[in-house]
Length: 112
Length: 115
Image (cartoon, rainbow over all chains, first blue to last red; front, side):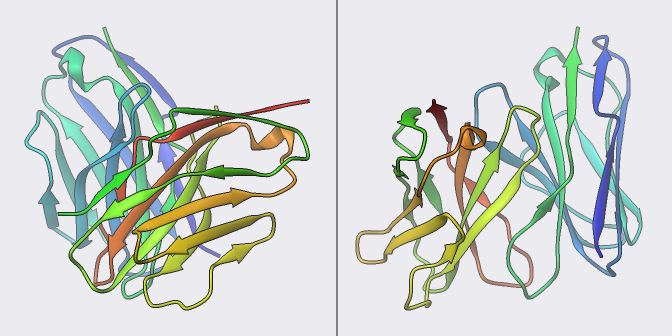
């Protein structure tokens, strides 16, 4: 069966520090991968998506970047965090030509 | 561009009663999918139900049903026989059908089920 792992679950980072959040998927090949952010009390905003290794599309200009070094690994990074980067980050995957996502358990990031 | 509107920031229902969460959408696509997700306080997003734009029958999954009215562009979620564990945020979302699906989410409705 397919599973998605996302870590860490919570993170408190100072302003200006780097960030690396990792997401891995098991039990499937060549999935579409996504990073979403949810600000407090808000809906989800798509940040990045990837349809294959090394293929990254950005939806919103921001202080973040994403990489997909392996088929089932998706990484969200920042060189210098801003206060506005605080939020709940969710990784998700989907199988091409089908519908719907499966989400990871999320990372709650607080930038202080 | 696609847009999802959820006009109910919060809803209250008593245990064992039914509740309807509203969702309207806007799209120029002919083929699309509509979804409902549940987000409990733990934060995880749980898929509840899916409706394709060409599906003739309303989708049902256990106590969840989707009241799909294509002409009105609405996709309301109906939860029957509410349980205390149904208390959570509920998000309506849509995507075009294609090789990748970029879900567009509404702002959510917080449902509180009381004993």
